[in-house]
Length: 632
Image (tube, rainbow, N blue to C red; front, side, top):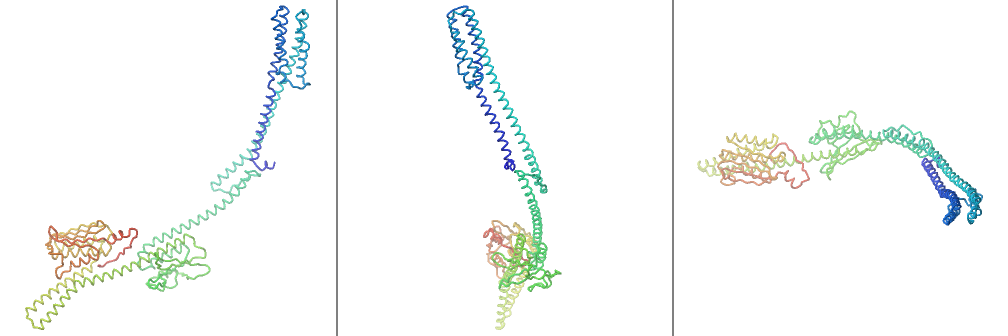
């Protein structure tokens, strides 16, 4: 009983078992009663046939009395034998109870006794009876027929009683099954359907994030337990959902803060990478913005000396004093905070030390002070990105300084070489002529002999002056326009006016292919070649071709002048020598030859530095140093 009270499933199973049991019992009893009624109809038919057989015997007696023949006697004997077989047959014996006190058994035995001892002996008497004997036999047969009808009545009453009992049992079990089904439906209605509807309502409310409704189920069955569990789950979900909303809100604030920090770092990247050596004015505002957004600070940036690896503080936010190694005393980027803080380790703050490094090279360190609470992962990632950004800026600044230094040394070397190859040799020649003139004066040479030396001195001085002007023009040359093409167009216009002839330009080079040094060398080669054409070629046309194909740059200067005897430089003229030197600097191949149609062709082919880097290192990108002006 306790199980039925605690379990709805057990009650449903018990109801189904009860209904199935009663149906099984009803079917079993029906089958048993059907088996017990088997043969009753046959017995009734046999009893009825006994009555018909008795009347047939009576008719045969009457025919025998009026027409005594042998056939009538044989017919009478057959009827008697048939009556005897039916009366003592198994059909009646099996359907009538064996109990001697039963009325059907007594009635059957009465018929058998009367037939066996009274009627059958009278019928088997020789046919010498009178009419009185025939009447007596008829009365005896009528009396036996009355007993047969009583037996038939008993058999019919017995069969009808069984049928009534079977109907009463069917009605009884139907009523019992209806009662059990009604109880089960009531239990399912109030203990299954109604609680399920209530739980469905609670589930829909929970799906809409409404965890306030509670189950009102009472009891100890499964649905009541489910309702109690649902109430507990709703309370826990409400708590978890509130905590999750709070966590999501904090995450949204953190993401918004990270997004703003990334925006600050992105906006500051242009000034940071293009600020030259002024890290204070470019990095200090960004660091202060990040301090406000991330609730950290102060921040100190220290750089390592590349020679003795000393750590030198160069930038501090919220500083009371100027950094020790400050380069610009007019800069106040570290001192603009009206309420400076001290970088002191105390119980309420901690320090995060981040390396400022590129590859394996340590450029410095970044000290970030923050409250006692642990930094979250997103803030750490942002600070790591900040350190990488500062490392890139510092590395680029150092590379620019080194490149500027190397470029300055190369420029001075080129100037010294060109002075040595041109003006120094002219001055040496003049010095030798002066020494020759002094010896002639000591020997009191003739005026005509000294006049020849004076002429050579005058020619040498003119040549040296011209070379000096050319060198000054070369050293003052700079690319003021947007790239090499603009400078070449200006050069073409200049020499077209100086020569008074048409100078064509064929330019087909992708942008940003040449670095500044290569652009200066190409421009100087073209200017030197056009200057030689103007001075010596006596040309009526000149053309300049600059094209890029197959990872190589072709520079060709042509004219239709008188041409060259050979490709060597004339005495006291260093134009071709300068062109050869610049071609060698570009790692190019120089070709100077006369054109088949007349004139001279100066051609140089070289691979630009960017193309060489692409061929040698397809993945690595080498930083270009965009220098200002100067001649290489």
